[in-house]
Image 1 (cartoon, rainbow, N blue to C red):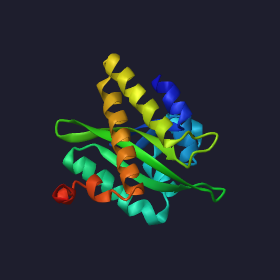
Image 2 (image 1 turned 90 degrees about the vertical axis):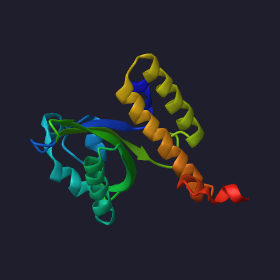
Image 3 (image 1 turned 45 degrees about the vertical axis):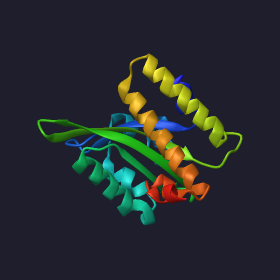
Image 4 (image 1 turned 135 degrees about the horizontal axis):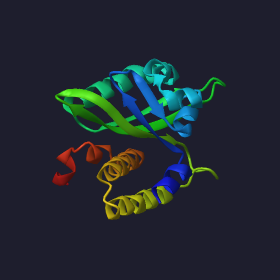
Length: 180
């Protein structure tokens, strides 16, 4: 079920080995970030990944990753990536840092392409339903890390939906709506 979800919604998984400065990822990550698939399977320098991030989004993306490391909190980011052919894609990344003896060892996550509903990309309602089903599967299979990543995706879908519906104060935790 989870593999079908990542295939259907064009999502890939990655591991960033911090000390080695290498990112290992699947074919979807290679495609999203314009990386050589064989190089990515062996471990690409993180700088090659950074080169694909849109310059207007790079600093915020790096700051978010650093905050996740500093706070030991889940990583969530939306940013654009540039392809060699000029196409710009919007992606969402979620991940988690892992530490050993108080030093970061690896950063593990998934990146998903965000696009309007097309033949290849289902509607937001379909996405939400399938992510919920994948959460149920991860819970049933006792896969807490996958469940955690999927729950972060659900939270991001909810935040994006609230912004689209102009409910942004609700998504930002603003209690002002309670006074009405």
